[in-house]
Amino acid sequence: MERESIIVLDFGGQYNQLVARRVRECNVYCEIYSYKTDLAKIREMNPKGIILTGGPNSCYGEGAPTYSKELFELGIPVLGLCYGAQLMQLILGGRVEKAPVREYGKTEVFVETDSQLFAGVSPVTTCWMSHFDYISQIAPGFRICAHTADCPVAAAECEEKGLYAIQFHPEVLHTCEGTQMLSNFVKQICGCAGDWRMDSFVENSIAEIRRKVGGGRVLCALSGGVDSSVAAVLLSKAVGKQLTCVFVDHGLLRKDEGDEVERVFGPEGPYDLNFVRVNAQERYYKKLAGVTEPEEKRKIIGEEFIRVFEEEAQKIGAVDFLVQGTIYPDVVESGLGGESAVIKSHHNVGGLPDCVDFKEIIEPLRDLFKDEVRKAGLELGIPEYLVFRQPFPGPGLGIRIIGEVTAEKVRIVQEADAIYREEIAKAGLDKTVGQYFAALTNMRSVGVMGDERTYDYAVALRAVNTVDFMTAECADVPYEVLQTVMGRIINEVRGVNRVMYDLTSKPPGTIEFE
Ligand code: XMP
Image 1: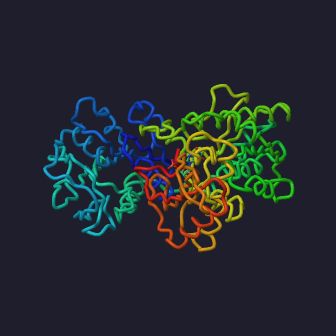
Image 2: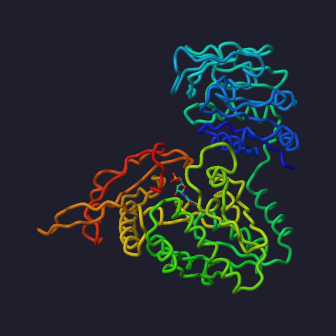
Image 3: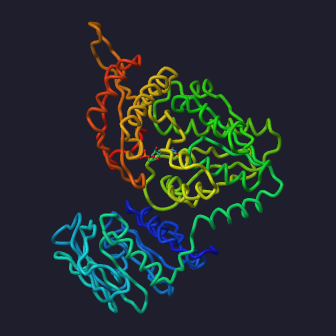
């Protein structure tokens, strides 16, 4: 790694991506690695600082994730968070035990403001606690620099060695001054300059892509979503006419979306992308016939994508590189980055089959979080309405139709979704609600319409607010709006006789249904 960076060692906690994002918000580049990453590799990466995350285990338990003591002897500052804090204390000679009182939720923490970690932080500050174990005795050479009513060691430090342990979670927004604490760690303690910025990212990426591609031909998978649009425009700036963008209409897009994508990125639009549209609807429906298992559906859709691209590439002639709009959360959530469990195999990562007919895959956004992709998009001059589009998953309506996908079900969900979007926009909620869509449940039930018995599908409406898509809350869409949407769907969409509103947050639900 040439650039200044912080590494996050992942011990399986749920907020690990957030840690990396918060560090990047301080304009410091940061990557997540498993706690199994060996010391030699860490030495080689030469980070300016290391952060140990939380995790679900007890650090004194048998087989609990751990690390060798040498990590703390590299001369690189280390910040342990929650489990990471306890582990640091245990390894260095402190004691960790089950707490008499479990602390969970927003908690008042009393901090020593003469600690570099808490410089500029209020002496009494609200922090997010979530722990069963506690540090009952700090390791030799440390001093306690924060406590709560129930927790004698909310933070401890050994300033001369640059070692810091925090029991709470500064990465979570409920910790009001958490960003200040992380900024203190990366800037004051680790000495990072904070020069990770999107303008330099765009410039460096263009140069790097040119060097890599040379005179080669590049094929880009364009979906019209933010990530692939930014990737395509970035590539077009880098290699111009050597790029061809293929847009696959897999028949799982929102209503009229295929035509809209063509209007913006096609020959009539403002970009020079050598745009090719492939209408592969029938082909997808055939592949998906009879398939109900969500992961299998995702894999089929992803694999078919690659097959279609291969065929297009053959038509174009020798293609050397395939571009994909994979972003960092796709990598981490697919279990490739850290230790967190695989929840869904993401379209851009897990869906890739083993053999691909290209020399190499270029993923120019692989290191970026979503907000960073958007910033890069603006840097590239992509209009705001495209950059701030709601996310739409690669597998499209395929994962918003529970169970088997058929052309008829696609029609139902497209129509219901179009009505929902129209009404949300009419109510002026399209700028405030994070992500909203209609999905088709696999449930049919009895209804009555015009004195006739019906036996039709139930549509589920979903609307969530989210900062980072890792967690989400159900959005408070006014009842009247929902009623209007319900009335229109029942009246206008053939095959639906029930409309439901999904109240589930994430966790325990995910935003999409599959
Ligand atoms: P979940 O359902 O995992 O979704 O809570 C989180 C966010 O990711 C989007 N999503 C995807 N995006 N390929 C994508 O490009 C996918 O396979 C995929 N699955 C979910 C989802 O729309 C939400 O914004």
